[in-house]
Image (cartoon, one colour):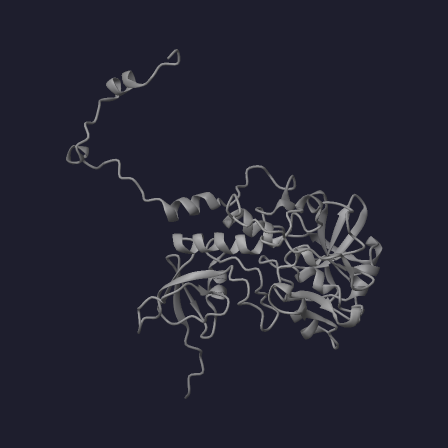
Length: 358
C-alpha cells in the first residue's frame, strides 16, 4: 500500500515552530503562526498568482537554511517568494538588521509618495500608513522634488491618482486574472514607470472595481465614495445577495442609515478572497438589496475599530517587540563588586538624589 500523505516540513520563525507543506513560502508559514511573527507585505497578495517580490517590505533573515545545510543565507531574502526548507530558522521581528532594512524600505516608498493622508480616502485602511507607523523613520534624507501626475479618470467609477502609486502591480494582476481584456498596465521604465491605460481607454469591464480593493494606497479610489467620510466614522457590516455574476458576499459601510460604499470582504491580512462585480459594488446601495449577516470583524489594532469595542481590550504593542529585539535584558542580581561599582544602601541612595528645591 502506497502512502500518499504529504510529508510536512518544519520551519521556525522568531523561535516559534510550525509545520507546513513543501513549497510553502516563508511568509505563508509565518502567517500560519499569526500576526505576531508575520512580515508585512505591500505587493504580495495571496489570491493573485505571480504577485510578490517587488516591494521588499517582507525581508527576513534566514539564520539556518535547513537541517541538512544549517548555514545562514548571506543576505536578507524576500519571504513572499522564498520557499521553506525542513529545519529552516527564520528571524523576523527578532533581528535588528531586518528592522533596520525595513526603515530603508519605508524611506524608499515614501520618496515619491505624497504625505496627503488628511485628504486621502485611503486613510485609516492604508497598508503604507501601517507599514510606515510600525517600521518607518522619523525623518527622510530625500531632498529632491517628488514626481507628480495629474489625476486621471480611467472609467466611470475609478479615479487614478498616480502620484500616490507605489507600483505594487496588484491592480495589473487583478485585471489579468479576473477579467477577459485588460486595458491598463505599467507604462515606461525606471523612475518614469506609471500605471496607465492604453491610448486613454476606460476600464469598463464588470469586475473593474476590484482594482480599488487590492490597491494598498490611495492611488485607485472609488469616485462614488470620494471625500464622503472617514472609515473610522462608518460602521461596516457583512451582507450578501443572490448575484448571477459573483458570490454576492460584501461588506456594507454605513453612515447612519445610509450605505455610502460597498466593498469585497477581506481577511485578516487585508486580502480579498472572493471578488465582486460592479453591480454589487456601485449599483446596490440600499439596505433592502441585501441580507444583513452581522458586524464585520475588524482587527482591534485597526483605526476602524475606534470607539466600537470595549476599552479593556489591548492593542498589540510593537514597542515591546522592538525592545525585545534591540535591547539586552539586564540582570539586576549580578555582583556589582566585580565591576568596580559600589552599591549604596537604599537610605544612602535616597540622600544622593537632588531635592525638589534644588
